[in-house]
Amino acid sequence: MSLPDEPERRGFSRRAFIKGASVAAVTSAGVAAANLAQAPQEPKSFAIGEHEVELKINGQQRKLKVETRTTLLDALRDRLDLTGAKKICDRGACGGCTVHVDGHAVNSCMMLAIDAIGSEVTTIESLTQGEQVHPLVQNFATCDAMQCGFCTPGMVMSSLACLQRRGKPTREQVQHDLSGNICRCGTYGRIFEAVERTAEGATK
Amino acid sequence: MKPFTYILPRSLPEAATAAARKGAQLKAAGIDLIDRMKERIETPSEVVNLLSLKGELSYIKSERDSGLRIGALTTLNDLELDAALGAAQFGALREAAGRTATPLVRNRATIVGNLLQVTRCWYLRSAAFGCLHGKKGPACLAMTGENRYHSVMGYFDCVRVHPSNLAPALLALDAEFTSQLGDRQSRRKLSELFPKEARAMLAEHTLLPGEIVTAIHVPAQPANARSAYRESREKLSFDWATTACAARIVVEGGKIRTATLVLGAVAPVPMPMPEAAKLLIGEAPSDELFQKVANAAYQSAVPLSQNVYKVQVGKAVVRETLHAITR
Figure (cartoon, each protein chain N blue to C red):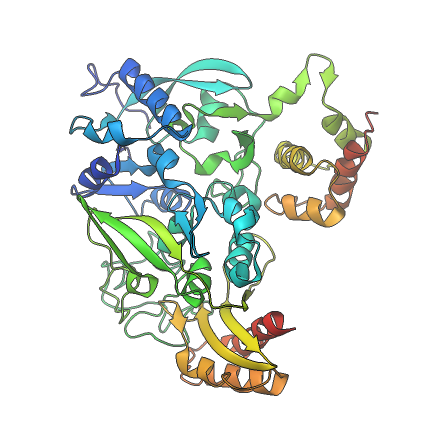
């Protein structure tokens, strides 16, 4: 269901919001928040309806329209045509929608798109540049680590987070880090092999 | 989800003012809230996003007395991995955080969000049913219905269970919390966050409208204290406990000197078990002793039609927790 865009957004403009977001970023960098306490009474807000926002996705600033209730997953798939992340359970239980937000693997279905403003979002699409594919993706193919392939984008993104964090993970660590991703075809063994091959530096 | 206005407070007082408005709902990561909003069980007109205060409210600080101060927006992943929680005394908290849901959820879910998540009772969480606790029906539907994951003790007119696995761990460590209401701050025992009598018509926490939990305090633990958290569940990942136990023990000269014991997932609130813990004092750790303690912890259990298993499994989890600390 889409709602009509409000002609004038009450008490909010995108410029004002972006200013606010950059202040928040400074605060998180450790600068004292004391001066923020004297801010005017009305906090910034997004009214009901669509808003044009900017998200940083795969290193690029992308402009898109989202509602306050749009999840990051829906924004990626329906607004930006980045359909690699899959909508399977839509409740954070399957991992099909896994993307990285500020370097952490997360369920994009359980996150509002507007909560991603100011963050770096990385999706499965970033692992393929033309004919060039990331070694992890290549190893998923080499190990035949999929049957229906629906869980694969999420599996790859969780595997990538595991490799980025641990370098050379043990089998137990791979299992731990992938425990939020479900493969109904049961190709787990080959997925673990693909992650381990990548850690060992295999590219073919 | 129904449409809502999204509010970005720039300070705690601003967040508190916004949250006190009728129809407003505080959100941290939103893992539980967005779930309920998608089911249309929760339809706030305004969502106050606390994540805009992450810079202020996400931290784990070691206090001078070796206690911990943990910001309300600290993620479970941070709790699992932070070196400050590496000591044996904080084992229960580290283990509870590391077992919650999935790594993908733990990367966003916050410590206070875990404590304040709404019960997983399937009647309450389904728009198709109306129950007393949800204020949409005359009675608790689980009491006489499908109740295999529900309470075995501590219930009155609603048999939901408290879903947080951090709560038993934090209670075993004598944790406290700081909250902000308007411009007033107060610090209370964590046990006061939960209602004394978990009646159906009462909220699952004791916070006032607009009151925001800002920090959790884990005080300095007794010298040589060790703690652990164990739970039973049906799946190894993305599941809530069927029974849980957290305990903290000091052993000196082969004898247990102090002990705390808290049960989780068996009652509408986390259940400290001081009488059962007392049986440990002055005794040498042994399986026989731990069995006695487990029996005492579940002595008051009155299981429902489908959850008799919880008593037996729960006792095993108590024993396993105590063994984990003392071996």
